[in-house]
Amino acid sequence: MNEADELVRGTVEEQTCLILQNIEATLKACGSSFEKIVRITVWLSDMAHFHAFNNAYRNHFSDGFPARTTVVSRMAFELDVEIEVQALAKTEQKSRELASCL
Image (cartoon, rainbow, N blue to C red; front, side):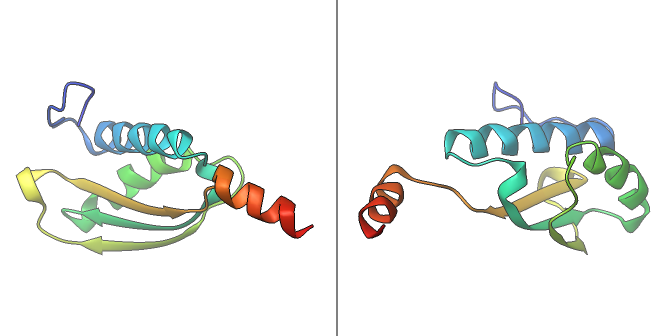
């Protein structure tokens, strides 16, 4: 989805880049980043899209890739790509707890 909450039905590369941009913004808002992603699950509507997806995906990771699972599935709204990430985030409360333990 774009900033206006509209579905983007572009190429696999366009969908991948937009999803990763949205994920990056969410991670940043949560005090995290791509470098702190520990696991990614990717859904593709067709395995024939894997090469195009992977070309766009690799441009967003400069320091290696996190663990990744890729699944082929029929997608909601007839989109071609969906991505879910698990990442580490530092919260102020955890920082205070850690500081008090030292």
